[in-house]
Image 1 (tube, rainbow, N blue to C red):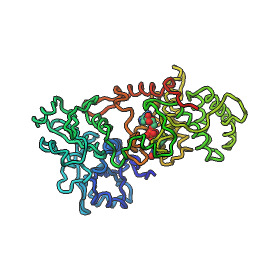
Image 2: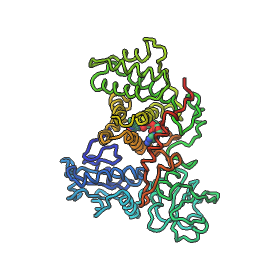
Image 3: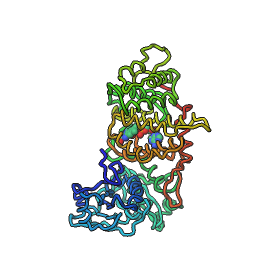
Amino acid sequence: LIAEAGLYTASDQIIILSPKNVDSVLFNSTAAVLVEFYATWCGHCVAFSPTWKNLARDIKEWKPAVDLAAIDCADESNRKVCTNFGITGFPSLKFFPAYSSSESRGLELRGFPRDVRGLRHYIIDKLEMHNEAWPPACPPLETASEAEIDNFFQTNNVKLLALVFESKDSYVGREVTLDLLQYENIAVRRVLDTETSLVSRFGVTDFPSCYLYNSSRHISRLKVLNEARTFYSYALQRLPGVVRTGKPQIPITDLLKNSTLQEWRQFNKTSVYMSDLESALHYSLRVELSGHISISGNDLTALKKYINVLAKYFPGRPSVKSALKTVDSWLQQQKGTEIKYSNFRDVLDNTVQTSDAVLPEGVQWVGCQGSQSHYRGYPCAFWTLFHVLTVQAKEMAIPGTFNMHSEVLQAMRGYVSSFFGCRPCATHFESMAQESMDHVTTLSAAVLWLWSRHNRVNNRLAGDLSEDPHFPKIQWPSPELCPSCHGLKKTGEHHWDQGEVLTFLRNYFSSTHILMDYLQ
Ligand code: FAD
């Protein structure tokens, strides 16, 4: 659950320090820790907090080697900790190397950069200052020589070596090394452009560029859209055989043989299936809601809004649309403060027998199938449903007329808050909604808001226990799925082209592209 503490919450992936945990986090830790000491009332701290949060998302994969923390020195109960560390101004950053002793006061970072890229480079510089007590999870960051590379497969138990050729002052190689530290069967090393013998052996012409080398001494260049950190990391993390540490590497067919799952339904990984959307409706309306015997107050308002956006925008089969419209008009007529779920259910199940209005019973996941029954399914289809609805609201808008731009998002927010069974999910979603949902002022912005918040959730959950090893959480869509969505800033930082992303989403989630296979 979210521990509310000043400017940060637990969902920001920043360790929130307090007198209780400060010693265990900072001292004798296997990871280095960079701490921000701030005060909630300090304007500079407020201005800096989005950068600190973005940095935490950006270097999430580095956590076993270096983690971020923050402490609110304006909180009375933290005052002593901040005084002990000699903090007098805010924000202050201190670096605690791995295995710092309890005497350590940390290394004060004066005049630190105020942007994610600068801070990331700073962290690498500080990591490299470790000598004896190198963080065990941190791979070597120094440059590789020809001799090392020649002996690499004799001395390392990996199948693949990725070599980033670059100039001395480039950080790309070290960033990619750290981005891959939680992955198995691959190692990443940087090679300088001055290693002329290696450069000519690999036929390197561009700096940076990335080459793959295996134990059979086969060399191939990594094909990427742009020669930059994010593109290398994206590509390397998803090479065949490369898996996140601790995740099984079993072909899907073997997994399924041993499971009690129904027969695997072949599907196109890049399409939306109506069967998932109808299954989400079934599960939400007949299973999730049925836990509420009577529904009143904010919950009733949330239900009415949810059903109303479904009735307006669900691009379903005529019979399903008709069922949703029937339920919607019934709900709108309920003027009391409470309804019984059983009455709602009677209308949904069409006890009145208006023949052509039916929502099929049961779930049949297709694009949302998991490799095991506890993976994917409902939450996957729930996200998909709302992406489709935000896109439909945009497509169906009549130009020049007033549109409730965040109507679909608010309906999702209400439903998640009142009914979504995963309560920690609801808490996290609500904190994102509070932060920025009110800033959505167009229907396009609503489509993009949901996309970017879904990516935040993906970032937080990457590597989590709930991640299906066959469907890793990525920043979506990948460069292969939408090349034009990805670009580079002048600094070499990855950049989402939001115009292109919007075009892509409107096409991907469009009603005309939904596949009707496997429908009951
Ligand atoms: P999902 O993340 O469910 O995505 C479904 C499909 O949508 C993907 O297969 C892909 O085709 C597409 N997609 C992926 N990213 C995007 C994007 N950015 N924009 C548009 N489409 C995209 N689980 C937790 O463990 N902790 C949580 O806090 C949590 N919070 C949640 C909050 C909400 C509101 C919801 C609906 C779910 C939440 N979940 C949470 C569940 C989690 O997000 C996943 O839904 C679940 O783990 C299944 O993941 P998946 O691999 O099927 O992909």
